[in-house]
Length: 240
Ligand code: PMT
Image (tube, rainbow, N blue to C red; front, top):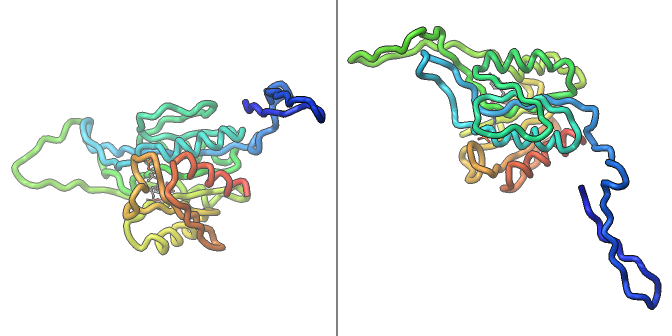
């Protein structure tokens, strides 16, 4: 609810301040009302045995901020979330998943009914070939675990995206622009949000990020800002 101060009066009179509650005029239509987006967030968990797993450092903060920003503009949001300790933003529908396979199933189950997806999750590229039923016992020597590729969720949505908007993220540590550009094309994203672990204040866990928005026409570098503000800029670009 916004409050505006209006100064009323006539010449010679003192001014009178009227505080107008805009809710009284009825809610203004929000810019993304009637639209539906998937947002993926957080880290996937790939089990090795009942005790151990392979994962990464994603806290979910960036994805949850995008979900919140979309919902604030009136969109219906299906937040497909890996494990995080965050609370689901207001007005957002959350689907909890653990593995990359579960995230793939959850996204593909709803994608066709949506207007697009923002792929913010840090998804494991590899998962153990087999998951042991019992805790693996250690021996004296080293051990290796055979891994197989996971499905690429973003690429699978990219193949059937039609006129939907598909936004990707790229988390890089070297050759940032080239790698992001290649993901943009390979996964059929409309644009990709590049963040690099080499940039202070960017990437995993913190409340800030430093990103470059890259599409087929060029790149826009944004300064250090809160993840919530980055989310607003991403949603602005989706709208445009
Ligand atoms: O959660 P936070 O702590 O706030 O951190 C935010 C973040 C660093 C996780 C986020 O900003 C980010 O960069 N997310 C993407 C991380 C990543 O896995 O990037 P990638 O370059 O490996 O993947 C490229 C794109 O393909 C991503 O959109 C990813 O979601 C998607 N992908 C990757 C692998 C896979 N099997 N399926 C996918 O859909």
